[in-house]
Image 1 (spheres, rainbow, N blue to C red):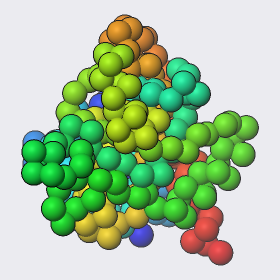
Image 2: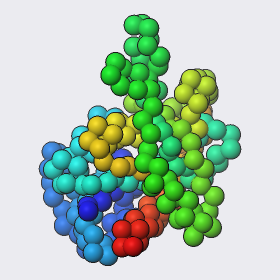
Image 3: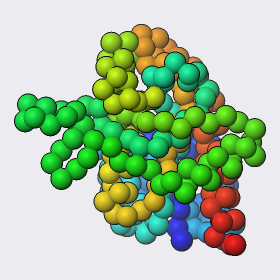
Image 4: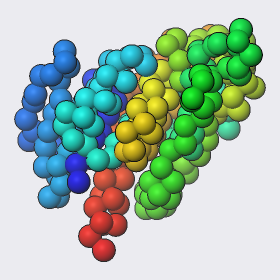
Length: 234
């Protein structure tokens, strides 16, 4: 077993690297990958850089080049659902690409032939996340996450994504990672900490809450690793 832990930005994996302390760094495909041993299991950690192309490349590399057998994504997102506030955590049940549009050919938004509008996350990992939330005394919302190559800071666009996909939160990498993991039969889990409300104040609040949100998300993901190890030890 080898677990991949992924984020989009340095801030999203920095707390994990700090916790691990010792790791080796490999430069590959114009990115850096950090390998470490944690409680007897191998980890590979990386930030992809922002967007669907880079996250697709990084997820594929972690699986195909570094032989990861499951993938956990830790990062931040903008809220769509009014029930989500800055600092809240959301676990993706399924993900879609809100900027994928071939509706001119009669298909729904987010769909391509031989594909699907949504990709579902691993249900067993979602169940483990409920145990982690209970242990940490946190309330974690489950919901749909929409992904696109745009930082949404517009109320109208946010509301359209919410109504079209039933999405609770939005970000820029999750669905592309989901597509890769689904295609390569690798179980995946995506956790996001809410850093902004994806509205006119998003650019301001994003910078203010990125670091604290990323720390909380990273802590949760490392406890997910602990749960996975406990489950496999039984």
